[in-house]
Image (tube, rainbow, N blue to C red; front, side):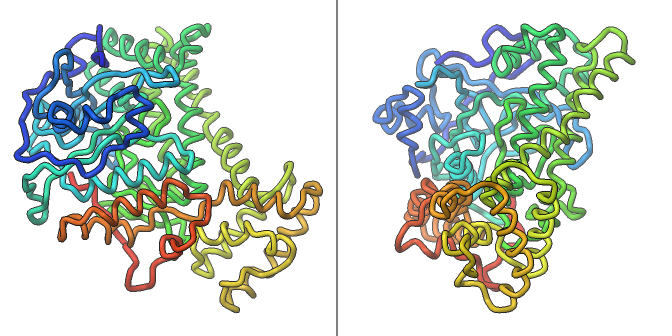
Length: 486
């Protein structure tokens, strides 16, 4: 394992003092991911490996770092944030030849902790592990979970909670806020070093472009447009799209008060502190562009010596976001609905479907899954739809089937199979996630976590006996708010 920021000056990070925990115990080790990273799972579960994963003691050559960054949090700029409860262990090269960073979250105080304790509660650790691995199984770019641990200590939040740590893996932990950190200090040399480092890592073709930094900005815009489209297509709500929670790699990062929608409502918010709906489901594309605009502002000194020209170049790149998002989202919706080719009425078809889902309070995931059956494609109404819902959907179903007929003569069986490959049967249902966390915290029972993890590893295939994982919550089971646990 090599140091991730090797060659970059010390103002990019701060070396920590390790604070060993009382009694580190593994909740789960992601053995397939460990093998992909070339790590010895047996060593990781032994005393030395566990000491490293819990940030208690490092083997020779591993020098952890706490990274510096800034960020806009709910629209308000904070010039110095940084890893206040995380340590970057270093880089490994995975079996595909890609560099991956390994980071421990909940590892204790650092130079960036401010008034925080640097620890994490077990509940948010298990949520991030489950959600990030679910996203990976769904095919969404994301950080990955290598390990979850109990620390044997108590952390104080609203009440005393068992402590935990998550060891996660990312293409990098470079954020929009990392660029803002150096821009706020007018450290153009640092900004250039960071951009060159990020470009070499995530956009090597940009380095060979006529205007490398502009090409790098364009690559981040393209990656985020595609990522947010993927979120929208599966009903995922990040919850806290601050600029320090947006990775320039295009991976989903920092799973705090995130969740998947049950009933479709574009205004859905899960973060308890998002009182005004800034990060609501429907706002995610516009917030992504807002964040990317902050990245462009930070990069202006690198885009041109002429500020007006730099702004013009940045605006041209940012102007392409909506078209990129639109193309990715529409392509995804066509796949979810089994449509072939493009037609003028597609946008209206999509909009009417979502309006009908909202009016009938239909479950987002299950509606698309219900449409993915051969019998429905051939004219049947989904068997589990109540009569009022079936009547409300009847006009739309007629329009959809007319559109299907325009797009080729694919066999219903084949079309249904393709639709099921992009419309999951299982998502991390909020009420089940909360029940899993309660079992772990209140009863020291990790069995629900392991079972849910196994189900979500294969989200597109129906699994006999696992129907409760596909069922939406009853009214009394609905979870309205989730918490990041900071």
